Length: 450
Image (tube, rainbow, N blue to C red; front, side, top):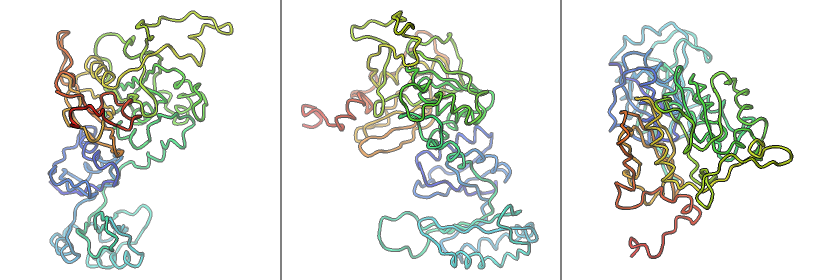
């Protein structure tokens, strides 16, 4: 199969392959590549795809993909690159008379305009005679000198690799600006940034004809990005004030509905509801094609569930306040108790195992203490298969984007393979909120310190 260069954005390097593999499923494109050849320090990956049309289709909704380029050659020097390009002169004839342009870039170094022009002129042996057109040319050719990242103050001398080919498709990174939270009419203190929300929509395989649910919907970021890609979506939250925009959040303008109107997604975001997901009203059985969520792990907002300190579950309040039943007030918040992070995740996996269709995906964030994390800390469930585990580091702690696929329907006798039952120690997300606010200090009596 023909070779292509996937040109990644140099952000969220641990997420790039997971999104690329999700795109192969979304677009039904067969891609072959050597996973061992992937270098997170490089924005380039060589893949094999049946055709240029399939390659363009693959990346058209990619968020971490800048473009995909039909491979014409590469080398550590221009002499090596030119030698490889000259071996297939039959490629040139098709573009001899059409309009064209060259894009010249460098990774890890800045090139002057003079250097870029000199590079373009060095490809004159291709014999292109058509007009140069900077906007909408018939063919765009891409040259990139890859110097790599460096933490040394000395300037780069020579590139480690020079890449050349024809651009055949681009990703959808412009959506990051479209969904930029700074431009939204309504947002809260837990609103997920646009780039990660869009990546999660791809990981969830959000597409027309599927139903996506967020059980911790907050201000609705995932509803918007999933529905942008054609999915029907809905969400719920224990705190209706966030949904309605009545909790003092910035830009309170009719809550989530203001954003749906802004992005014209009212027909695809079906509804939002207020309830504790631990005591949800959903009917039994499989309902959702994907569950996409950011559980409240406590850095900006602690997780809560219905309850009182005395252990009872509150029923609907009939208190009258200013002539109105208290639970009908816009600022109403029910009695709650803390919801420990490991319990949140265990319950989320149980919920997904029941409510996802077979083949459906659960995409969620898992916070972990960086120094203590081990791969086996990721909670497991017999009905769910781990698809991807991508880390976003923050120094002493990280959050991991976990993607799981439902692979089986379990009987009532099956049970959760929880981390508490499979690990000899607490997982790195146990009591995360408390540990975050104590700066992850360990108990001096912890035997691991002695």
